[in-house]
Length: 132
Image 1 (cartoon, rainbow, N blue to C red):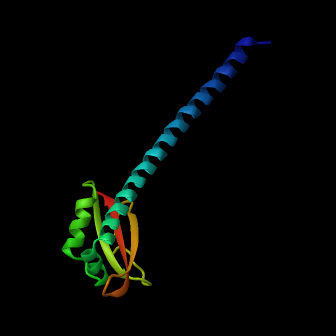
Image 2: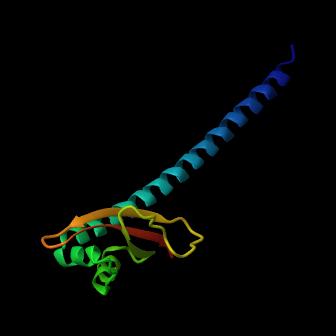
Image 3: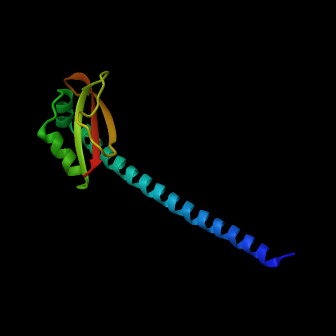
């Protein structure tokens, strides 16, 4: 038998295994980084929406269907600088989409606000964010 030929076959096989291993590690790491970035954005969005939910005057603005400067200021203060964000208030059973076309990945989180002490007028508040 020819030992050199078998050694070449083993070397090629090991090279292919090494290449597949390196590529799979790179692909897995890229997926984990993307996932952690989106998780962080969703966490920030949840925190901003929770702040609106717990503030009586901001809740009243949402129930009135008004995107006020107070709502926008709250979003701008709570969201990171690397994101552009906009909010939209919709009636509960109507379609609630972003009015503009964005060519980037958009992260959306929403909450429902049904009432405050004086007003029952269910609304959906959606927060749309994308990277600058």
